[in-house]
Length: 150
Image (cartoon, rainbow, N blue to C red; front, side, top):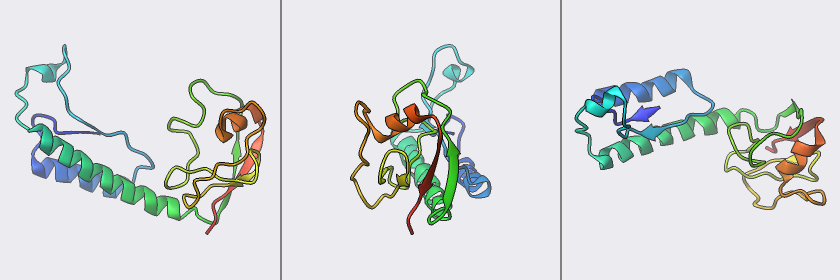
C-alpha cells in the first residue's frame, strides 16, 4: 500500500486505514510515494511534504501491527502442522513465508520441533553446519509442529 500519492487527501488516507480494519491483512507491504521515471505519476505535482508521508506511513504501519498482534494472539497455544518441501532460494529465515512469532523471535528444543516466542532472544540449537534454525529446517524437508506457548 502506498501512502502520500500526490492526489491523496487526509480523508483518502483515512479511507485506507478503514480498509485495513475491514480486510485485516495478515501482512502488508507499505511505502511512501516517490516519483519514478517513465510513469504517469511522474508528471504530477507532488504537494505532500515528505514528513507528512512518513507520518501517514507510521500510522498505517501501527494500525497493521495492531491487527497482526490481535490475529497472531489468536494462535497462541495452538499447534499447527506445516510441510517443509525443501530448501528455498534466498537467505534462510527471511521473507514473507519465514515463520515468526510476534516480535520475530524463534525458540525451541531443537531445529525439528520447538516453540516460538517473543519472550526469549535465545535461538534453538542448530545442527552442525546450519547457519540458523530456519536454515536447518530448510534442509530437513519433512513436517514440523510448532507450539506457540500461552
